[in-house]
Image (tube, rainbow, N blue to C red):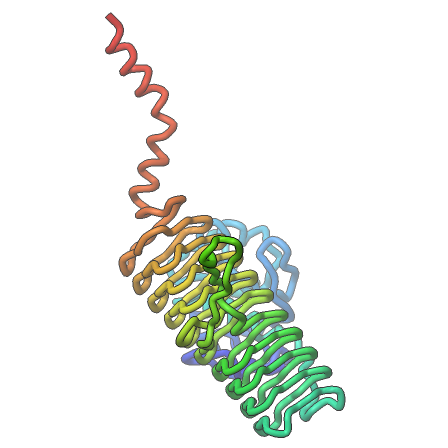
Length: 358
């Protein structure tokens, strides 16, 4: 199995799992080898479950302490982490600068082959005569591609995907089963949209009518624009803008069950974890990290490089580079100080009561 071309590493030497040894793996990773180079790597596993022939990972001293009991043949470890009781005559350590990237590379080597739809258009698919399909596209069963849509080269559409009128899908993109791209929306190249993702559904906007007897739906005539290398997890939704585009920048990764409201502007290389809800017209800078279950109120601005802890409720702007947590969310150091004070309150109150006693 060859390393997937989707992976991007600075100094990777492509190898197959059939020829993978401690030596070839060290060369590919640019790692310092401490042990026999000829040890064969036949699998990958956690340090507790590894067996003879497996490669495992120790990202900190906690896991390094378990190396002696592990049955793994090869261990990948950060250069600055000491591994006690290592025997370089029988097992190999690969010391790397970035263990997380090394893990990603090794896992990609053992990734099972993906069953893509066959090249061409399945007989059951419905493709408009005015749609434009690139070279070597893969259009699966019951796909529907509407008028004037464009699908780029080598893009794969799994069964039951719908591409709306006037949409543009870039090259080398994969849309899994049940994905819906509504009219005039744009998806970049090298994107992955998992099952049942919705791109470009109406934004959520209603106003009471004049006599307060019903809610009037607010039309949304904008669209959604996803950049290149965007990944979106299953059952997530990105709503179309009211007037212009809701945008998600290049390289951003969105987990399952995430809601992004109308007019949001999500920056590049952001990470948004599951069940997060982002209200309308929120501005999110580049390289922002948002934990699971976060709620962000409409029209907030999240600065570049900010981090938001899981289950936080963001009610106001977050400056660039800051870490926030809590409900309502505040600066991490302030919230932790408050949490540390709460258990002390009964004692403080008791002291004050004693002072008040005559």
